[in-house]
Length: 621
Image (cartoon, rainbow, N blue to C red; front, top):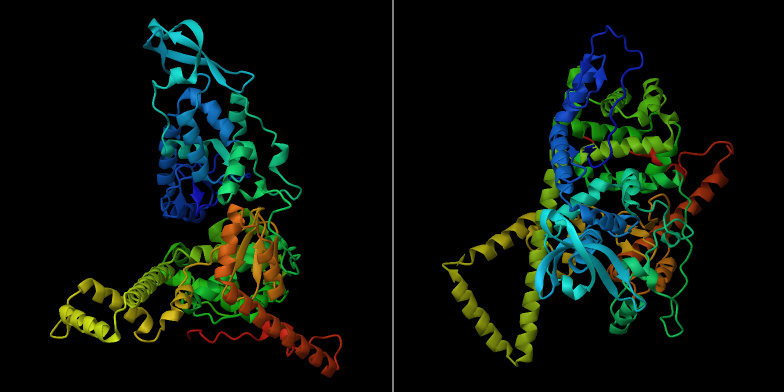
């Protein structure tokens, strides 16, 4: 089934009140039935948009029909996997916690080196090569593999059998599966990843276990690797540790001579939104902060957005402006939402009074069951009563739609160009610095360096024009994007960070928890491996304890520590600044409470109610 923007999409069930004699509208390639022509037309238009992804091959930007055809071809290619390899491959897939690329490489490597029951190949018999088929793998007391093979004669029939060693089976009769075929087969044969789980019918057909191994999960349900299957033997671990190479973090065991690691502080979890909705909250807020100029939406704090989402008032200025900005962006783009509004003959101007109507239109267009009950609530004018998690899901859908608009895509392309220009400048600065150091070591005097520079300038310039066209173009790109002479070399890293297209995870710890830092928020967020739990660190002491607790002998924690060390001053300064702001706000709140004679009501001057005073300073009239 094709994915809509890489997410599962469910087809609609037939109407329950369908009359046998009633004329209906049916989508040809999904067999969905509609009683209303407008609903049918909206669905068909959605299927025609290039927002669909082939679930098997991963190809994107397809129409629904193109994705269906792609899945069909990919499924056919997956069936080309040799029959004798299916069972061994499925055994290796089931409950593996490797990424798709790593799993493909692992299976491909094993297929290159190992033999399986049912495999047809060539072997040495009586000094000559003959076709044979492996009937059984035999492991003797010394863990040496022997193979019972059946020698194939005429009509592809087994004539006799014998037991041979692996050295006698080095020449294969059939080619192995390619990496691309394995990748398609893994996607086609599984129902989920992390860990990978194959379809129940395949497991039953080929005798694959369906009960997860006991050592796959730890007490909190996080993935745990197995040393024997995923990361080699104990000897491999010892060899890597001896060489100083990192290994999988979960294979590391405390030793007396091991590194002294500090104790990690507990995470703060005092979110107002449901804990499994924190990811949606961060995604929406980070998008608004990154593309505020395009949205014509001035900045607001994460706390203000969280408080506004949880508030029961239906027309909060912050939420109205946020929704209106996203609606205007979608309308200006002229995509599916614009077409939907035109069909309903809506005025293309979202206001404080009409914004809920445009929200209802968007919910109708998405046609998701999870929004059906909320649609009627919003339509009655009670948006504030919608569940907090649903509000965030709706905003997530809006942002997901906004990301595909031409304005955002163009901005992303510009930022990528700026990043490339800054990277080129950083390389130029590093090269120049290296050259200066080399000349200094060689004992070149300042006078000689000046003469060298003068001669170089003469060679590079003719009547004041630079001959090196490529170098000039790179310089001009950076000058146009950033302003020539405005950025000091030591600030190039900061400028690179400002031009970031999206916020990326800093890395993972040994239990696959992901760590996130956002430039506009003074907290270090931690996301559990299953994305259902969130927490954060908010002090410099907690950051120091976290860094001190990471074991650099592990692959994941070594990479995470490297990133935290690289951004240490940026993160620690942000944590310190936020703590000062929080302390200052607490003092103001206490003062406001002391001055207030109305104990039952909170004053809007209270800093915790700042979201009520939001003004969109970038709004276009």
